[in-house]
Length: 263
Image (cartoon, rainbow, N blue to C red; front, top):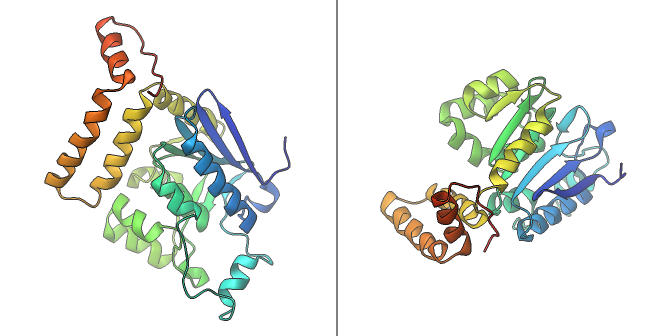
């Protein structure tokens, strides 16, 4: 296996991004942030990729940012070094949120801090029964800096999100499933296979329609109903002209599996 800190692989139209620092609990360095951003952008731009899996090697999904001697925290804690204005457009949480390609977090082990926010930022979460989500932000004197304050209340409501964030609570896999934070909890040896199977189901559908559906869901979170229906109709018009639409209709009439090309 490669000794790179973040691994990238494309198999059967599914890109898999893997944190590969098991000895450091897959904590993320500045270099890993840059790699993760680049891999997400590359996967989204690749017409051969129809779904993206994010996971970790070893017993942890991601235990957060690497705080040991990291220039990430050193720069932020130094008022002279800290920038007055932050450009966050090319950071992993922002890039992840704006991807059109569906994303699956295969939470193979515990995710804490930044790792928790990253998992929450994926479209779908599959979690090992031995894994945990640790919202340890306030216990470290910070806020969920990577989207958690925006995502968590939308997933489970204000009251439950407030309790988790304000107390720095650690959630078991069973609690995550009960709250609806994850799609399913499986045996820790089955997380990757479950994610790959689900990604395969997504990849079998018309990619242009899947991507348009994700864009509409994202836009719908900040639109009123009438505006949203109008935007959905505008998305339908080019889909009606696509080869995949014709293939979808033909395969339905001919009672066969479709072969979508993403055109």
